[in-house]
Length: 184
Image (cartoon, rainbow, N blue to C red; front, side, top):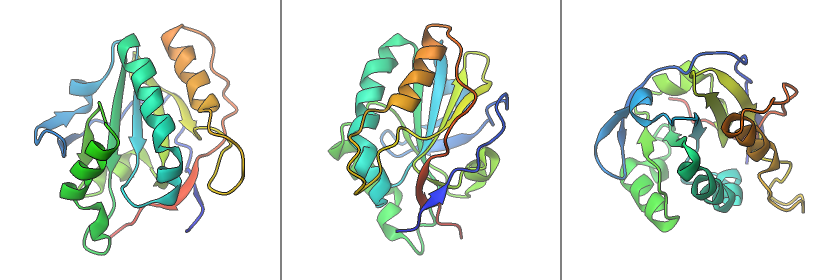
């Protein structure tokens, strides 16, 4: 289990556009199609990472709490499926179903989207405001597999509250930590 930190894309970066297939619906979507009225959360996750498994329940709670408040939620998997077949699109569909995803789970077959976002690990979180400017990138909270700290989503929730309720967001943000993206 590699412990890879986020690369921390500069705040203020405009959300890179993409057009990817949703493994839940078989439709293709762009960032513009899925962005929320108040802001948009883009998450790089995958099916097999123990760090993702550790936080998936809190990701679902965050989605359920904030989608109805105008936050667009997007999950993307960019892992190489030749060497990591457990992250293949049909298994992404199964993973999303098992965890009751109410948001798209997109497959980045070329890995170009992960490169555009400078994603490094799973999970990696990017929060954009309603002008598509990056206002938060980093960790969900301080909980990690085995460290005994309970999941709260406090770091990400605080930033989302800032976007939803037009509050200031602390620019001192901690990188996420997880498995490295499996590059080809």
